[in-house]
Image (cartoon, rainbow, N blue to C red):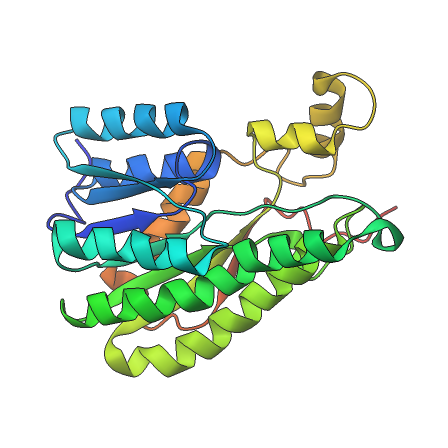
Length: 259
């Protein structure tokens, strides 16, 4: 049986219907937390995540909200405050973007990507911090990516948004720690989710996976559950003195110089 590390805790995981977000939401529920499941477009997977959480004996609040929209952020946190009265953990996982070369990017794509991936962290944190202070502090963790510091194909706008997210993490970390709120980020390498399909430009899915695996010194892809473990650690008392950091979880993927 998992330890009940997060008993009596309320966790919001944005974009938690599928992939990494779902794994994080389930991990918190398995360790005693009640979880707010957020989605925007795909209701069915989010409902399934909520059902799995409820089977674990935990409460699940399902909220449709586009975190790139400031009015939706307000409504999301209003619902959390109404249902739970406070919040202990915010995981900013929701992400989007347009993968295309710099010369083909459009202003609409820039705004859409930056609003969901970066702006949402700042304005969600403003609301979350108020709810966390009511409960004596809290934890905020964002999901970044290697594209924040490395140049990935056609990733310019997403990479810029993740760089902004990591910068926000540092500033928020320093500003909020005096309130008992730790702010950090996790930057996974290549995670084995359906998102890999977005990078598939040629060949079969198996060939694409093998191409990624060949570049990972650890010899395999990262699982969503492994990302969830690190997020949970950053939300635990053991991480009390980790402030404004981005923890890389990539099996060594970003370290070697390409041959």
